[in-house]
Length: 150
Image (cartoon, one colour):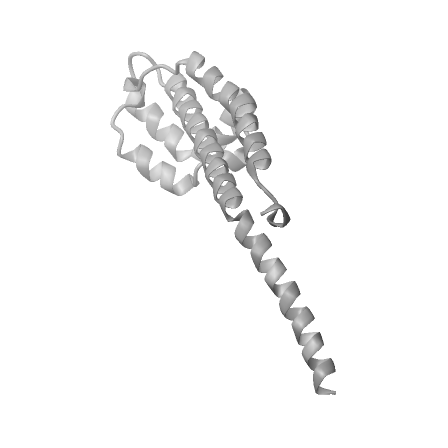
């Protein structure tokens, strides 16, 4: 009876060892994937922030009533986020937290002083997201070696 219990424990330990070794071999790949995902998240965030400022800046008049218009825009920021998302085809899930963004905007004296949006840089970000990130993900999957081969 004791030897039968030992063989079951031995089989369990062997499976646990195999699982642990597989997880250890995946660590470099998982770390790389986490970094790539973080890069994508940050890139999308930069793009959305750039478009929000661009959108708000375009709403400000050139001469009179700048401050009042800016205050109205900040007051109805949730609606402005929706309009910006629609106009530039951006997912609302990529937009920043509303109240934090509003608090930061309140510290800015004149939104119209921001530089114009460089659309070539946005196109470059889109190209990186569409092409370069896909290549990085492909390299991550190719460079992983199953534990059985080691």
